[in-house]
Image (cartoon, rainbow over all chains, first blue to last red; front, side, top):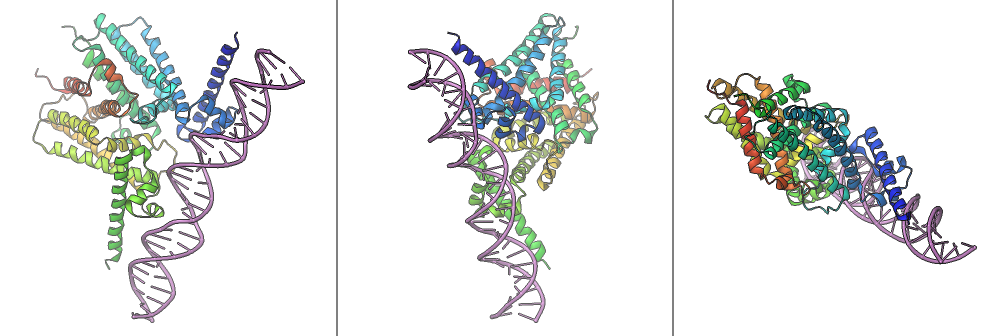
Length: 219
Length: 219
DNA sequence: TTCAAAAAATGACTTAGAGTCAGTATGGGA
DNA sequence: TCCCATACTGACTCTAAGTCATTTTTTGAA
């Protein structure tokens, strides 16, 4: 009785198709101008059908956010698989994050959407919301893992808890790449230009200061 | 011929009144559920009138954002006026920022609105947008100033450019307080709970690591 | 005080876009 | 071939932003 499974597969396939269409619309018009009618048209599907596959627009965007965080996590995983010192891994994770923001700004934006939405009290219930949280969790664990590796191989100080340190790197790097994103995509943000520091310089100094803060010094 | 000036004053007064009404609605319903009809009702003014004082809803929210950043800048200025070492000022600026987010979350949210909006290419033209940028700039200058003071009084390392350091503190602290905000106001964000680190602990470690990074060591 | 022109204010209307649902089409099983 | 369940449709409703022809108020000159 493979029918139920086939149906299930087809449903997943169509969901993916709709997500791809949404992606196209987003890349064409930007997340802010995403609208369901256009997604329906792009996916060659009726508007009503969208709502068979996604609870609402939020849910659809969370679908994109999930894709985005999965991509980022993939990149992260690749760093973790390398045979390099933990400290080096931390650097590379930072680079990967920064590149992600530069190469796939609309996906980063979708991830920010997750951060900004769902202020306590809304009806939540979204499959994708959980998957997104899951992915965030997973990305964070990678950071923790890299730090643990660094502590074991002696490249990172052991005076902090790995989770504590990971949390700081996580949150501060978020801040830094957000600024970089704004610098590129928000006309009204011109701080970097005014003080004459480039995005790259900013990121370099960040990495350097982080390095100073967490690297084990030979004593 | 004081009529023009009187009109101008009245106009400003009414604008302020509308902003206060918007504020009330926001505090009652949250920024996401702000709507123009309700603001009009609260301000005892017709909907059409709102658009005589604000170009559009965005502009109104930017008005709130401007108020928010002005309040924050005020708090900042008070720190700068103290007779304490620059390093201490930097700490206190951090505390002030964190408190602001905790005490006035909806205002912080309005400030984030500025960060997230206006992705390049929109019709910009808003008085308030410029004023908000201005305020951001000003807040940043306070940070630079505190660092310069610290460099002069010997409490902060002189190996970085003040602007460079200010930029890092600015961006990383943004990241950290954003996480704190999410922890409080975004149900789907449960990272802190999972790893068992409180907002306060996170902020303490952040301050500590910053301190280690920038404090001048007696050598 | 009167009145016409200018300025300010109004709220019914238009528009955009999310979300719904009664009705239609399709495909599997008897 | 027919029936039922499931998938799909698009015209419709609803909400909220934004507009504008009309009305009200204010101003200043006669």
